[in-house]
Length: 316
Ligand code: FES
Image (cartoon, rainbow, N blue to C red):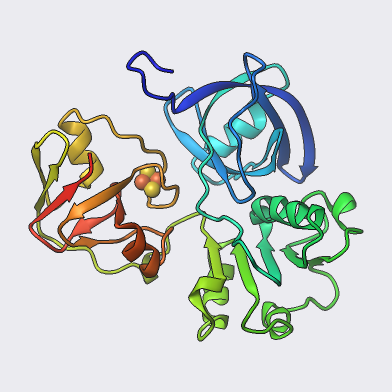
């Protein structure tokens, strides 16, 4: 417990193993610094890694026990993944967040199809391992640019139901894979933006409850127009009302007002800042929940959502 009695949201983790898993990709195995078990996590979950400079990055769990993550150094990126990949070694510690799962396996699925591109393989490989262990029907299709860039190529190439499509020779298309699976199949996709766009186009007409996507970055082409108006949020537990400027996120307005909110990606991708809406009409701009899920959960992501009504009452 933290000093105010609430459960801690981060903890120090010790790196107990490091393995090269492909070009510019390393695997890190983590355990709690004090030796206690890390919080239970299920396939599809991710954790935040908090860098010493204050930035944080989300990584899907490749294994839930012990936690294993794969870090791909993006050489022309913003430097965080490169620092994590190049710096962390066995015996180092890093602060991690509690596991969150926006990409869970659906209970009761009879035909699960996992479609991975690039480093998006990590969450899907965790799901594949879990389903195989349960004796369930699953196939995993993994597209990679080359054998050298294929994650754990030697270990994965002989696994049952796991198909690697790397360039060189004729590559099976996603359309061909989907054509083999009827409307009852649960389809999971994680990979680069272009792959997710193709997945979305190919799955038009399928039951949205059977479609599951995890994104690395927000797709602005599918998000609703933002509003250019300011509005207010009322915090139901304290009764405080806070104005949100037209150029400000709710998260920014709340933190500037001294309200302690957990957050991570600030892009509507991770779910860390999710809050329940008690009244008012939100304008959702996250990349996690479907419209149905928004209706059922009555929550918003404070970092990107806005309001269609003049005021939102939040369960905070
Ligand atoms: S901080 Fe990640 S969804 Fe808001």
